[in-house]
Image (cartoon, rainbow, N blue to C red; front, side, top):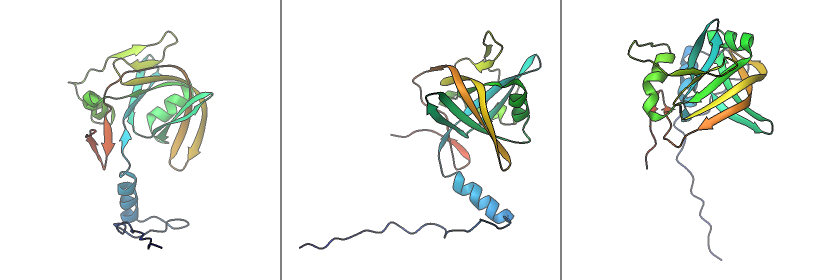
Length: 180
């Protein structure tokens, strides 16, 4: 009978760090942020009606939740204006950004530029969305859950569209792209 050899993966870069029940130091907060940034995500633009205009913010905490009913989620910091606007209007759009829309992402991530003029369109019921996005999901607020310093907004998708383009990705604190 032959011998079975089990190869062990390379050891982790850092050892496990216990956080439960402890105050998090600035060092551990930074390390946790770096660890979470090791998961590549797509980049979205969340839009909602605000007074007679729109409010938008870049978010990469987006996920599919359910097909029946069709639900998605986005997580937004409790202190962000977008969280307040979505709670009030109960309608929002999540727009998936393509690799050609990095400037739009940066613009809505708190570094506005007069050079960026996104093509915002409006639905009949007054929900703003980004024309030309890789994908758009028009949502009614289904549920919201406070979770630490963020609120998870679950939206029921009423309408959607998508295109076959390469997405804008975020990895380790920087924009990146797919490689073959």
